[in-house]
Each structure stands twice: as C-alpha cells, then as structure tokens.
Amino acid sequence: MNFELSEEQKMIQQSVERFVQENYDLPKRVEISSKDPGYNKDYWGSMAELGWLGLPFNEEDGGFGGNQIDTLVIMEQFGKGLVLEPFLANVVLGGGAIQMGGSEELKREILPSLIEGTKQVTLAYAEQQSRFDLEDVATSARQEGDKYIINGQKSMVLNAESADHLVVVTRTSGGQVDEEGITLFLVDSNTKGLEKQNFPTVDGLRASEITLENVEVNTERMIGDIDNGFEILKAVSNNGILALCAEAVGAMEILYKDTVEYTQQREQFDHPLSDFQVLQHRMVDMFMEYEQCKSLLFRATMETIQDPKMAQKTIHALKHLIGKSGIFVGENAVQLHGGMGVTEELRIGHFFKRLLVIDSQFGNADFHLDKFTDF
Image 1 (cartoon, rainbow, N blue to C red):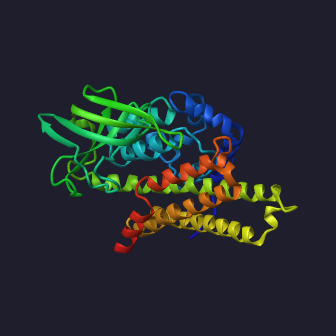
Image 2: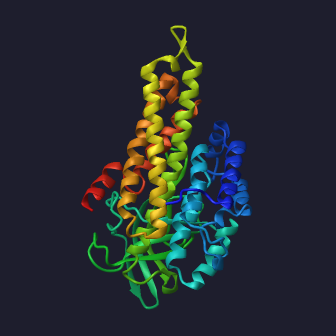
Image 3: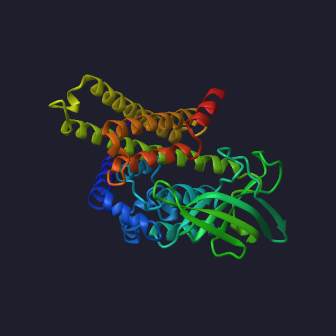
C-alpha cells in the first residue's frame, strides 16, 4: 500500500493546518462553544468557499470526486484544534447517506446546497435501547398511500439543532434487531410532529434527542430501497469511524507533544521532568500508541477504498485500538501534567474529553474487540 499523500492532498492538509493554527486556540474554542449554534458560521462559510465540504462528493453532485483519504486529511487536522464545525455530521454522515442511496432528485436538491454551506443535514440512527448495535431499530415507519408515517425516538443526534434535514433510520418490517427491514428517510427538521431537545455535550459539541410523532414523509424522500437500508447505514457508519479515528489521531499528537514540551520546562529536584528515565519511558509509550493508531488508520482507510467488505475486520481493529490508545495517551498526559491537567484553562483536559467521547461513538473499544474476535 502507498501511504503517500498526493500533491493536492498535501496542499489541503497545509490549508487546514493553517486554519486551525490561526483560528482555534483554546480561548477561541471555548468562546465559540459557549454561544449558539455551537460553531462559527463564518468559519463554516470559509470551509465551503475553500471546497472542503465538497471534497468527498462525486463531481456530478457538485463535489470534487475525493474519497476517505481526503476526509482523513481534514479530520486529522481538525483533531489538532478540536474544531467545532459540523463537518462529520454534514459531510460524512448525513451527506454520505444521501450520496450513497439518495435518488438523483434528492441529490440535486440537497448536495449542492450542503457543499455550498447553505443547508445542513445529519444522521439520526441511535436509540436509547440500541447502545452500539446499528440494527437495533424500534422507530417505525408504516405506509399510508404515497406517504410513510414515522413514530419513535432518536438519541444523541449530532448537530440536529442546526440541521435543515435529518436522515432518519426507521424499521419498515421485521423484528427490532433484524438487519432486514431497515429503511432510511430524509425528513425536514421543521416537519410537524418532529421535536428536538438540544443540549451541549461534555466535549463542547451539540447534540439532540429527537421525538417523531406521526411524522409524514413522502415516498420520494426514501434513501435507498425499502427494507434494504442497513447496508447504507453500515457503510456510512464505517466512514464515520474512519473520520473519528483520524480526528483522534490528531488529538493524540497534540497530547503527547504538549506533554513532552511541558516535561522539558517543568523542573523537579533541580532537573527538568524529562530527565527522569521513568517519565521518558512513559512518553515513549505514548508516542508508540499514537504511531500504531496512525498506521492502522491508513491501512483501514486504504482497504476501505479498495474493498469495503474486506476492510470490515480492520475497521473493528482500528476502533478498538483508537479507544484503548486514546484513553492511555489522555490519562498519561493528564497525569504527567499533574493537577493542572484537568483544569479548564489547559487544553489537555479538553482533548482528553474529546477522546473519551470518540471512544463511545459508533461502538467503544470493547464492542469492537468483540466484533473483531467474531470474524
């Protein structure tokens, strides 16, 4: 496998890196997070103008024909600044579902506006009882004429507060945990019967609990085929895992580098902390965990591009490793900084909280270890 980025991808990487360095110091991030809508609209507009929102989409849909590597490049740099703009929710999850299964009419309606940054869309898939099982869907959709009536609840829907549309995962047939019988619908957020309970998450982002009561949606708003939406959901989930893991790798890089820098400056017994061999070993372990995660991230991404089904086992391994290593790196960064490692004024604690949340999204380390051993 060739892990070298193309010249275009290197330029994108440098562009995103400059954006993060210039706009995402900790005080600025805290300020953005504390105000509605939880991200900076000007930054979102700039991302659209720079073409970042269109990178993974097909050229015929208004995008640039990129793939998961382009998303990796962006998300890794976003992880270094804990960027708040809803790239994951819009481009990878909601937009990704529409690109994979939407009709030509839906694509023409949604994707150009999403790429321009004027419309937003997210994915509503998780439910209270489902934990990490994508196929556990109790939200029902029954057909009445040329419409479907949706009833149910969705949990932890990223960026639903700002989304114009939601891709809602429903059950149209079968049992609650069957892979068959799952259907995806595009629902306007202002539809009668749809209610949101918005809240900030522990890592500074925004999410919502969604209630759908007799929500009507036209058959034309179906994404994919009736009862066969699980494959789309699984593919979108895998792309979401790759994007989150890229973000985690960026966050881990900041954590270990900040820790090395701090131990070189902080003195104890008339010596910098970095002079003590036991701490040197600890930081080498942090670096090795980061490098292993980055290597496996590239492998999983390349395998997904070449053969998504064959890549499934590697994706499970990657998500397990990211969860385990992210917590290891975060805990050691906090410990080596001492009590100040968990203060709001230092960015170490903010990065650690984000890594903890990433571990819980789309299945934690233990969940994916079980899936890996089942192969």
